[in-house]
Structures are given as C-alpha cells and as structure tokens.
Length: 231
Image 1 (cartoon, rainbow, N blue to C red):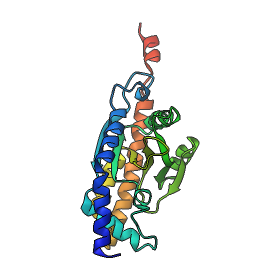
Image 2 (image 1 turned 90 degrees about the horizontal axis):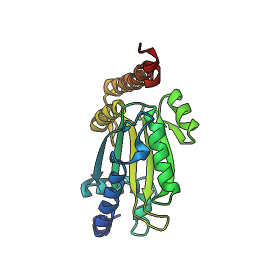
Image 3 (image 1 turned 90 degrees about the vertical axis):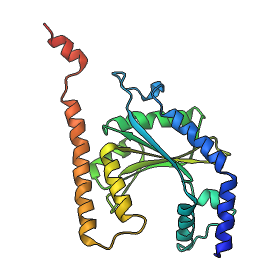
Image 4 (image 1 turned 135 degrees about the vertical axis):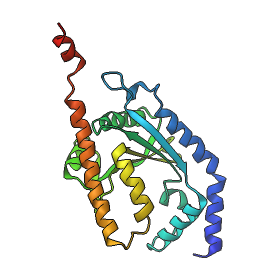
C-alpha cells in the first residue's frame, strides 16, 4: 500500500468523523448517573467514571499500516468494518460485582433496539476465576497471555449503520495496569524481559486487589441486617 492510499483512507475517515463523534456522545450519555439501569439495589450508581477518545489520525495511520502487514489490507471498501475503534468509551467501576449490572444495562439497551451489537461482547482475562465469572453471564471469554483484562463491546446506532463505538468495561485496578502496560508494552512489546515479568506480577496484584475490594464490601452487613441489630 502506498502513502497515497493511506492518505485517501485517512481522508475517508475524516469525512465521517462527525458521525462517529455524535454517536460517541450518545454512548457517553448512556453512562450518566440519571440512568436507573445502572443503580444497584441500594441505589448506588455503579459506574465510577467514564473516559472517552476519538482515534487520532496518526494512530489510525499506524493501525492501517500494521493491519496491512497482517495479510488483510485495509481498503476504502472495508475501512469501516476492519477498524471498529475510531471512537471509544471506557467505563470504570469499583467492584467486579458491579460488572453484572453494567453488562445487563448495555444488553437491555441493545434488546430495546436503541443500539445494535456490531459484534458479540467479548471478555479478555488471564484469570480462570474471571473467565468463569464472565462466561456465567454468557460473555465469550479469551485468556490473554499478556495478562490484559477488560470486556469489550462494539455498538452502533442500528443494524444498518456502519458507525460504531467501542466500549471497554473494567475495574479501577485493571485501568491502572492497562495504562502502565499501554505506555510500556503496546502496540510494540517491550524487549526488556524484566519489565514484561513485572507487568505480569502487577496484573496478579491488580486481580487480587479487585477481589479484595469485593470481599471488603461483602463483609459489611446489609442495611436490613444493621437495622435488625439496632436496639
């Protein structure tokens, strides 16, 4: 692929950028605190925070060139299907148990035909316990040797629309690991063996931290129990 071909693809994306930006804002709005579907049984909003980004053209160019080396060239005809993360929303939550509610809210929004899945949701993890948890919710799960953990959704306004937005859902602990790994080990893996090994250790600490958070919250008596204990 020539530089001119790549430039033409970038220009094609720029022509549709407003449509992607508009839908991304729609996705962001879904995760605001006035969404009753994201409140737990105690009325607490389970989304801690939301991050978002539109793909920079420099990063898009890198991705196009990288995909072209994989033997499946990106063309004008397949640009918007081969690449589905022109815009992305990252949803962060505190407890692993919060994920079930977030997953249910997204699935219900799709079932109600406000969105459509561009592809089935998929979870990535290194932890067999996490794998069992995600699969219990009928989320296809892949074990990642890189120790990456996150659940990915790709949604679009309706089944006939090519505009889509990637949603990544992960815990705050997983976000810390992901940011460090992204800086040091992505998209090109670091050649420093010690760094790779330490990232794996950090992933295990992060996983233990998330489980500990759930354990701490589960150790607190429910409101009903506390009421019963009051004199």
